[in-house]
Amino acid sequence: MKYLFLLFISTTLFAQSPNVKIEIDSIKTIDSTTFRKFTIQYSIRNLSNNTISFFLNPERVQPGSGGSMDTSVSMSLFQEKEELPAHRILSYTWKSRELPAGFESIKDEKVKNEVLKKYLKEVLDFDIDNESEEIKKSSDSTYRLTKSSERLMKSIMKLNPFEAKHYSRTFYWDKKRYHKVDEIEYYIDEKSNCFLQLFIVLLKEEYKERLLESDYINLMKTPNFIKGWYVSNKKEINLKE
Image (cartoon, rainbow, N blue to C red; front, side, top):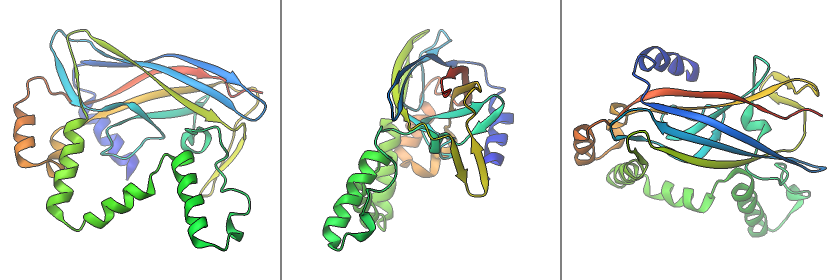
């Protein structure tokens, strides 16, 4: 379904005029014995002579395509022409993505939960306490809609005519070359050329069910609030030996 969605938006949104340009400016590399650190510097530029707005969290980059309704920047990883599972290869932290040694043997449930919470926060950037609190309140449809609308309205990005904003995001590679996702196996060749590419999917009317009516009405009245699918250049990333 993810690919059907992307195919749909590619045929419907690419016809839009290119108001926005997303570009990878550089990828800086620092190597160590156990991991390789990549600092990705990228920019988002308004190509028009109008002030434009759109839904986007420009500082958040998701390895992989992200959700179809996600406002983050998405990142794809390629080995030559083959797409690799970026979410398995690149991480937000240099720490091991394996659960701490001896985790399964911890008898004290309180201690075990604390270790798990720390792991989820540091390795997966997932705060289980905040998520649990949201789940408790999610049965209240009014609360759920209010919070959803609040998050979306806070994610509105504005660019003045020909303005460019620059961002930086760091990822780590643990130097593992073999990865298996479901039944598909991937191997990063020691001598192959690998590339990163960013893309953003800017939606508008599609968020109607996630916005308060008043917010949606204001949104539809906003001049030059754009939508579209924008893809960056490909930039080489060093995954060689």
